[in-house]
Image (cartoon, rainbow, N blue to C red; front, side, top):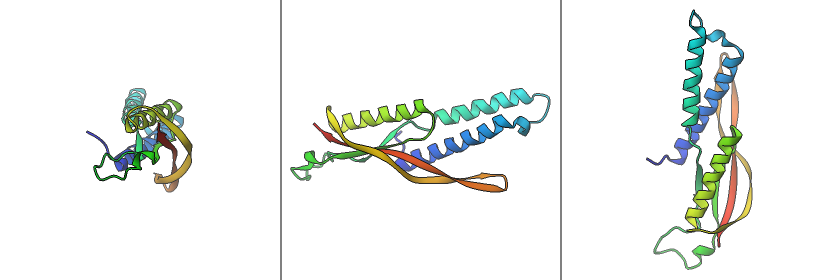
Length: 149
């Protein structure tokens, strides 16, 4: 089952929220009461890590250099493509997203491609509620413009 761009955004936002909340919980483990406090804490961390690992380490093809349409113009192959991925989170997750971006560019070009430009752009985000206060968490994306060779 393929997730839409919107689903990936919400999964990443949810994972960020859980990771921030678990970081606060690590600093103050008083949220768990009772005799089995450490066991409940371990179970909680397991759930947080499981959800975060399922949050999708994928890139999104914003525009493909080849639509595959029979009605496309003859110069379509000379147009560049654009792919983006969420550039937040752990380094190994960002590396997996970049690797997925490479795969999407390779697949879009049926092989060889070149990167024309790349850079960061902040877009979207989510409001995180923490007790009586709230804060805004910005989503930072990395864009890669590429051309087929």
